[in-house]
Image (cartoon, rainbow, N blue to C red):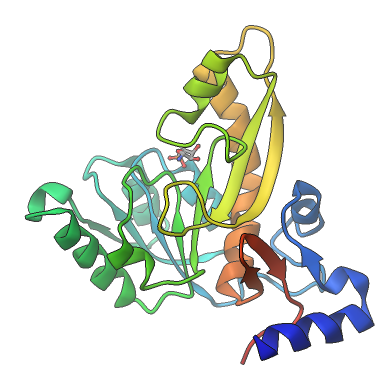
Length: 243
Ligand code: GRF
């Protein structure tokens, strides 16, 4: 807490933009291109583990942004995300719930595998399993998730479908820290995506993903660099890089 207070006060005295409340997409657009507002690379040799269950377009966005992904883990052996990892020369692993006696054992196996890589951040990029406390507590404020709705609306596995069924005119994505509740932790970035006439689940999700691809690498880079502090539900960006 002392470090956080100092970071905010010092940086605030120097430059208003050095410390910003995270939470608006405009903040992320300031950081676009893999650099933060100080011009430093936000991905500078920080180690990131990515968990993904499906196509892996968000993993690809991280790789393309220069994030150092040291391991891709999937719960599904057929996830195309694994192929993307291999093509990028990244280690991959599969941890299947079916290979473990219960959910706790699965969480532990996943935790131990990820922890062995000493990650600076863990990113859930379309990982379609709920992670239990055994996993979440091992990486406090270091797990980033992306969800295809404006949380707290439409939590869960069918967010885009549910938003369309509800008839919303605007949806979007939320990039947030992970806590022990599903789709719940402090918000890092959100971007709104208008629903267009004739949208179906695939077309709306595609446009939402474009925003996820823009925001997720910035958020992961900042978390991995130790630039994010939390105060309850609020996330703050600090200018100071902790030693
Ligand atoms: C993303 O929209 C993510 O928010 C959701 O699943 C999707 C994964 O897409 N949880 P991809 O596998 O990264 O292409």
